[in-house]
Amino acid sequence: MSEWRVLAVLDSYGDRSITELAVETKLPQPTVTHTVARLEERGDVERQRSDTDGRQRIVALTPSGTAMVTSLIKRARQRENDVFAGLGVDREELRDGLRQLIETIEAPS
Image 1 (cartoon, helix red, strand yellow):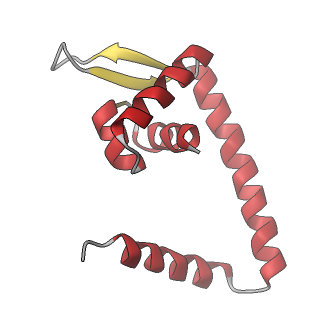
Image 2 (image 1 turned 90 degrees about the vertical axis):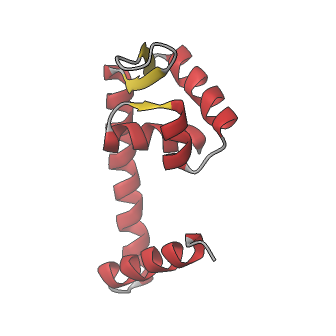
């Protein structure tokens, strides 16, 4: 799950630092660091030195990582279509309601 979150953020928002990935994936920074290391070993991401801060590393998708994300998104959308078809409810209404529920749950109290 952590790999999918990191890949999805990089695909949606572009290159990110470990700190930015931790915030955007809502995962602890050590988890993101280990996840990025696994993805890097597989060749799905690469770390580059930041242009603005030489101490910081920026994580970027490789062509292999981009291909994997594209495939995963296609499969996830198909699964989503199957689930919604089986529910027999208005897809957009349900999706909007779920998004609102998530925002309410995640909002600071």
